[in-house]
Image (cartoon, rainbow, N blue to C red):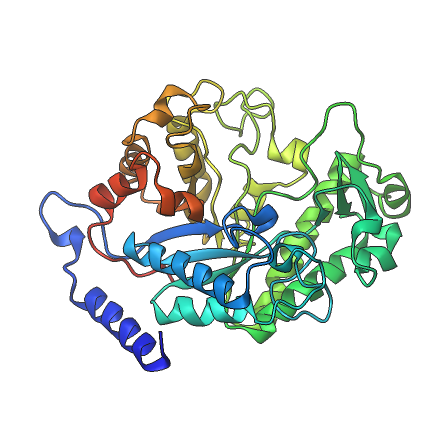
Amino acid sequence: MGRLSRRAFALAALATLATAPDASAVPGRRRAITGMRGVWLATVANRDWPSRPGMTAAEQRRELIGHLDVAVRNRLNTVIFQVRPTADALWPSPYEPWSEYLTGTQGKDPGWNPLETAVEEAHARGLELHAWFNPYRIAVHPDLTKLVASHPARRHPDWVVAYGGKLYYNPGLPEVRAFVQRAILDAVKKYPVDAVHFDDYFYPYPVAGQPFDDDEAYARHGAGFPDRAAWRRDNIDRLVRETAACIRRTRPGTRFGISPFGVWRNAATDPLGSDTRAGVQTYDDLHADTRKWVRKNWIDYVAPQIYWNLGFAAADYAKLLPWWAEVARGTGTRLYVGEALYKAGDPAQPAAWQDPAELSRHLTMAEEHPQVRGHVFFAAKDVAADRIGAMARVVADHYRQPARPPR
């Protein structure tokens, strides 16, 4: 689109929102015309975009804009764009190399600026653009020498922990935390992103029989904590609290949201936990006290990944949804629910996910909980493909009118 047509597109979208009837005023309908309707756009391993590395700049740009247009057609209002998938960048960063997922070669200039373009084109379409950063993942392989020679991890190998066949920055080092924040804030300074977004990766998901080797960092910085787990949780608490403060100072009005794994703790572990029997508990395994962040208003929104179907024995959507609603009750933290669109129609998934109406039922159930302010769907490729029409069913049942993003 040219600049004038983009502006016309945005004005038309806003006019539609301004004149659309408030659904809450229509008898028998409770839905309003504000609320989060988001989609994750993942770039790690070319999951959603670009569909393959090495495309021309024009091809990449066209494909990216295509995802934004699909979001608009499905009456979504927010795109959560992964711009730092593996300690790299989808903008010209002075701190980290260009992402290999663009050109196939880490550090190679793709010839354009994806983040800048995404912000401009999303805003032209009336979409919010949330910049999604993975704080500590360096590489999805274990070989430090495969990174470009200028990579900060090559210059600071003492920052790096190899674990589970991947490379991570050590969250227990204050210098790592400061570096990660600088890298993130560079994007916040340069581009008017609507929010900074973290996903569920803090300390890595546990791999059986493999310890995460942070002995030296714990010896140096762990004094005063009752055990290593408490020290690790404090490291992640500091990351969250400090990042929130830095965002407020750098670009006031830009929000900070986190999308954690859907189970904080099982009730069998902690009476405050959910009625679940999940094998992973965020508090214990990823050392992320997600419940605390919500209750203490450290973050602007939380989007727990409740990626299970209604009736799933170990983690029932019908039990986790009210648990998170109760956590958010009375706080200033908005609750948006992460939805597993990618499971719909996957033959490897339980029978519930072969039913196109499963996700629509999730949204219907959420309407009973006023703390739920919207939903985010994983992920963009699945919105576009919509294998069994699950997204189309959501749109038909719940998204008949456009909705403004929540402010």
